[in-house]
Image 1 (cartoon, rainbow, N blue to C red):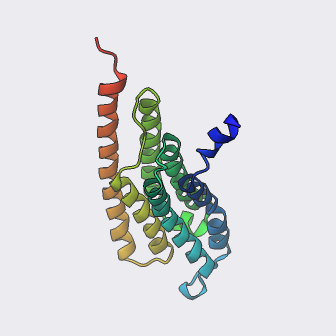
Image 2: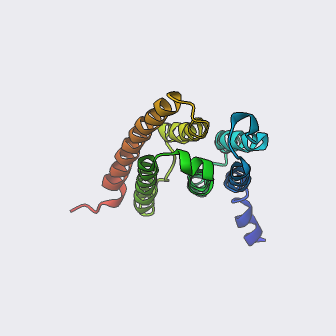
Amino acid sequence: MATFASMKKFFTAANVTSVVRAFMVFPIVYLLNTWEGGIAEFPLWAIFWIVMAMFSDYLDGWFARSYHEVSRFGKFLDPIADKIVIFGVLFFAKPVAEAVPGWFVAFTIIREVLIFGLGYLVSKDSKRDMQANRTGKWSIFLTSITFILMIFQLDPWADYLLYTTVAIGSISLFFYMKRYYHLYQVDVKKPS
């Protein structure tokens, strides 16, 4: 019975929503790879799944706050689900992989490795949790919209949004690094 009770706390509405979002990468990638080009021929179901993935990113946070389901595990799971969708689409959806410039892919990888890697290293020895900041959520949202504009080749708006996404992503990276430094100084670093 104790095992069931301990497992139940992981199966919250917020956490289930995050897991479902991670699995949305499969229909998105599949449908994008069936597309042969042209706005008129774009698969409508791909739009549905992209919108659902973006909406679920808001929904899991709403569930966590509304039902008092905020947890250390949930704060870890939410950004993992975001990364699975973003990197799954970026690397395996052919229209996106062909449209997005290599330097943006490198920027995204470096940013995510720094945020997740340093966040994990600091938070595992800290009493506080790793969690997304507001600019980080905006960065994920803008990255999704950027992918859409780029595959449709909606220039110059695609380029404008691409650079805006990099700017917001850089700002969010700065805020993450500032938080991690603070956690390191307060919770991790041993007093000399």
